[in-house]
Image (cartoon, rainbow, N blue to C red; front, side, top):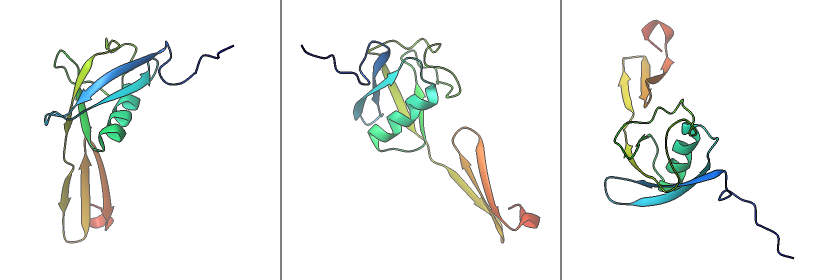
Length: 114
């Protein structure tokens, strides 16, 4: 008797195609119950790119805090991924790194903004 293989391509999973503007693309499989942040991480790992921003087939940017289930994405949809660059600023004794998603990390002398 053959056993059905269990894995990421089960009935509760979505297979999505994620492409970069360069034309390079990868298929990504995630649970339909995952968060959009999980999809973003899977796309980043598959494409070997960090700081990606994902856009739905209709062009709207996906909010990574939402759920995949409520996003309206369907099995087989094609997403566009845009690689964004983090920004760095510095003073004489402190640094700040602005990451995608309005997150900032600072370090250095507290009196100088670190």
